[in-house]
Amino acid sequence: MDEDNTFPQLIEALAHTQGSALALNYILMEVVRYLARQSGDPEKLLSGLYEGVYARLDNAPADKPHKQAELDMIDTVDRFFANARKWTN
Image (cartoon, rainbow, N blue to C red; front, side, top):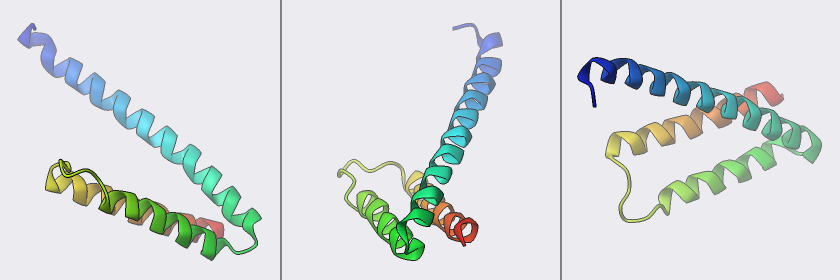
């Protein structure tokens, strides 16, 4: 690989990944908010989803990602559901 092109390619890959992640987050947030509002008990639905997602993180295979990545995943889940609660009420 040409070292002169490595950095711009890395920046392009990071920008693509960030854009995709943000778009998916927005889509998922709208779906979760819609389901919560339609459920009749938004807090119960959001709590159940949160517990289910968190259980999946806890039950990840033995070859868990790097500790910082795991902490970032937990932080992302916490922030997602905190925002879902805020924006659903």
